[in-house]
Amino acid sequence: MPELASRDHQKNILPVIDLALKKADLELHHVNAIAVTLGPGLSGSLLVGLSFAKSLALALHIPLIEVNHMQAHILAHFIKENNVNESNDIKNKIPHFPFLCLTVSGGHTQIVKISSVNQFELLAETEDDAIGEAFDKAAKILGLPYPGGPFINKFALLGNPKAFKFPTPQLKNNNYSFSGVKTSFLYLIKNSVDENPNFISDNLNDICASYQHHLINYLLKNLTIVSKETNIKQIAIAGGVSANSELREQLASLGKQHNWETFIPKMEYCTDNAAMIAMAGYFKFLENQFCELDVIPLPRYGI
Image (cartoon, rainbow, N blue to C red; front, side, top):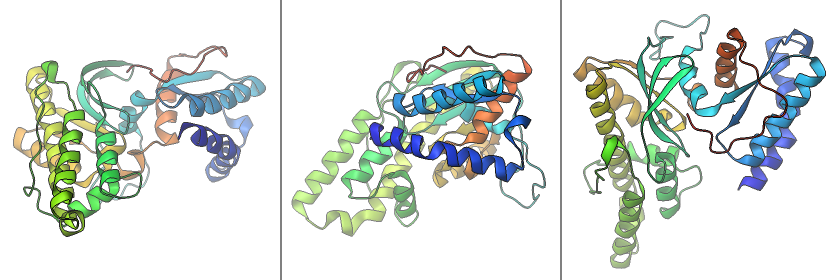
């Protein structure tokens, strides 16, 4: 609900920034630039953040840096942390250029080639719905809460991934399409419930496991093709759906199979977060890539 989202942004932006400064033990006069998301995203929410950032930059007489939200998801892989425990499953690894990144979220499904911190090339994308939306719509059909992806992932861990079948669209240029998969899911549930009103409750784990397994296989099938075509073996994932446990496990498995070096973000850097915006802003700051105060939100900002 875009209107409610923008209202919550407006309500929370001051206390969130205040808390961030306190946790970092900083004051505003220590800040030497403001990085802010220009897009893509919901226009109302983008406007709240951009308006606040403009005001802060103007009041403090410091530069404003506009950031592409999807580029920032990818650049989250360059966040360095101190005191990283060597026993952690996710090490503080940083990819080398060039590398491929599968960016997967509620609004995007893309395969991007990254040649430097400011050079991104879109190689493949969805032609309709995003992978995150495919998860959320299926969850809604099943009567699960929003956002649905984590709930499908939870039940999938207990189910049979081969219990039900779904179609795999074949598109040019290694692009994706999820609308047909969603439609087939809808009719599977509708027709099965007509025959057995308890179909969902009787088969919830298997439904979730089969649907998730199909979507993840579809994502990685195209990624594997692009890796072979480009001969790039540095492979990363980013975006909210990169928190999915099956995607993380299958990518690690494929990495061993194809001799890839894989980069899987820590959970806190998968979903939207300020650290990734700061990381992208930092690279632009080093290059003096500042923007004017007359910039406007770009809800459909390309990679």
